[in-house]
Amino acid sequence: MENNCAALDSVFHALADPTRRAVIQQLGKGSATVSELAKPFNMALPSFMKHIGVLEASGLIASRKIGRVRTCTLNPGKLSAAERWFGEQRALWESRYENLDNLLTELSGNER
Image (cartoon, rainbow, N blue to C red; front, side):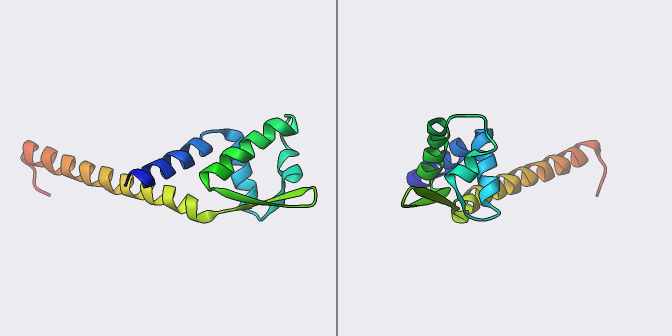
């Protein structure tokens, strides 16, 4: 469980930054070079590479270098883990709201 929590924390940390979310969104369309990914952002390449490093460390992306060109690819499995967590939270809160609705109905004397 602790390992899963650390992995999920890493994913949420990576997704907390708008630049990194934009990179993930772009990679959702297919693999791209670091230069292609960096083009829309007004920052130096070394600064952009720090974002790539965070995304790689979280496991959200993988990159490979051929010659001088580094190409990045999305790892959708890591996004699925975050999606499962959100699904669990949604189910929990829907259950709590349903219980609250039932209690309020019971307290008001109305039947469903």
